[in-house]
Image (cartoon, rainbow, N blue to C red; front, side, top):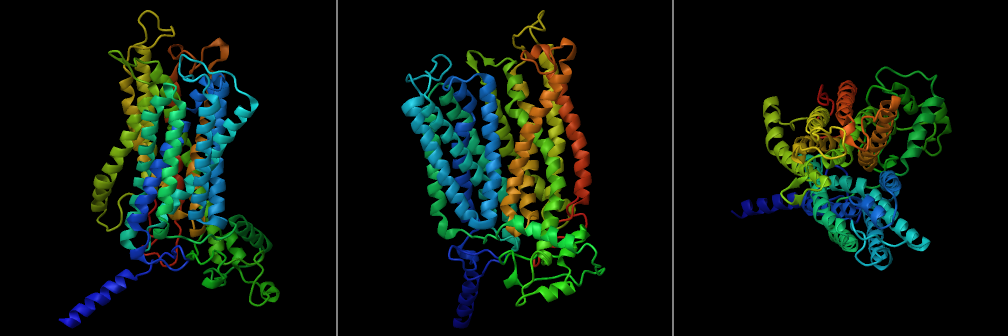
Amino acid sequence: MACLELCKQEKFKDETQELTLDGSVDWHGRPAIRAKSGSWVAGTIVLLNQGLATLAFFGVGVNLVLFLTRVMGQDNADAANNVSKWTGTVYIFSLVGAFLSDSYWGRYKTCAIFQVIFVIGLVSLSLSSYLSLIRPKGCGNETIKCGKHSSLEMGMFYLSIYLIALGNGGYQPNIATFGADQFDEEHSKEGYSKVAFFSYFYLALNLGSLFSNTILGYFEDEGMWALGFWVSAGSAFAALILFLLGTPRYRHFKPCGNPLSRFCQVLVAASRKWKDQMTANGEDLYVVDENESPTNGNRKILHTDGFKFLDRAAIISSRDLEDQKGGIYNPWRLCPITQVEEVKCILRLLPIWLCTIIYSVVFTQMASLFVEQGAAMKTTISHFRIPPASMSSFDILSVAIFIFVYRRVIDPLVGRLKKTSSKGLTELQRMGIGLVIAVMAMVSAGIVECYRLKYAKPGCPHCSGTSSLSIFWQIPQYALIGASEVFMYVGQLEFFNAQTPDGLKSFGSALCMTSISLGNYVSSLLVSMVMKISTEDHMPGWIPGNLNRGHLDRFYFLLAALTSIDLVVYIACAKWFKSIQLEGKYEENDKPGSFKV
């Protein structure tokens, strides 16, 4: 009996001292102990942090254009242009945050620093609004205009909102990756939890924005701008404190140094050896020892076929042997195969990433043309007016419902149909499904617009009045966009996290954000081109100021056609794609067809 009890104690001790397998470390830089770090304790803290930070960010962003027109006195065109610049800056700063995280600071330090900047920006905006911008008191609603502002007050305002852009932009790509770091993908149970984390992360993001779009949006629309900004600042501060409280529990990955220099070294070394001959099986390629790795101890990437020209950077030539000093080779002439494979991984990701931009064009319509379409419909129930922008709540509800349906119904069902122990749909398959649903959303929006035009004011089809068709007919298009997000954006987060090397995980998350940014720019370009072509011969165009005189339905059908073409190209790219192959991964990475649509 004593022997049995001793065996149980030894087993419990082994379990509590078991180390993670993915190379993560604790706060002190020691190998992380599985039972004492990471997992859902740390993951839940990150999810709550994300929800609070999103509430804070959208508390400013959702009504910024109204603040610029009502409080700062700008016209609609200037306000829209300034908001576009501000939004684009957020996504540019995401690349800055990803670079600093992967190269020098690590994800924890980067998240903490940029959250502090975020809080400072929000407090500064709240103070400047309360003390100087909201004058006379109570101005900024639809009826009371605010007075003019001095150059100093304008400067403080722009400094504040761009500090917010810097803070949120640098923080956003890193927090998703940092949350995923808390789960060991080399462990079967934690690996499945890591996949689930991205779904819950996107849900937390949407729930945070739901509060901003409804409660805070209402207060700000009524002119209570300072209150809305102070709530945002308080939410961001609470998110920062919560993040710091979880410090002892987090798992970390060490930064790997400047990836740009590593990429350039591979290209230069391969170019220098373009005449060198390679063996067919690649046995002469340079494999570095773990303690000499330029990627700071992260997992090695196994050699793959494709982009064979780059393999020349890892060929050990006679000159490399002559030039070595103390067993150290010139990194601009010889690179380990893991470093070469890093470059290959990014090159393979680019075609998939480019295919996601058209989807982002569709997604951006929800904040622009969907709202304009809703404003031209019947927006009243009895004496209550429904703000057209609030219809995006149906998108958020759709996201929440479809995340639950996918995690609890679709994923287990597909796994049983495949008769395998692996997860259901792959990331690439889900992204393809997201594109299909996006096509359906645009077709639905186009059909609604056809009927909206049909029910325009009888006897006056070209007047500027609204249609008698209820705004609730927009629910299907919002719901379909929400469903597509679950498949496309959640799948995209998982895909770029799984397929980027250990030293470039934050860069993978930044790719998702830049896809949305480019989607905004492409959408703007597309609208400009359509209006230029459709307004020839003095025609009103497809998207005039008075939608009753235009053909917004044709623009929606055009987006459906473009997304369908993008889907065909995406399928071809997905079939060509080869997944990353990490040394020691608990599942086979090179299973045929595992990443095909």
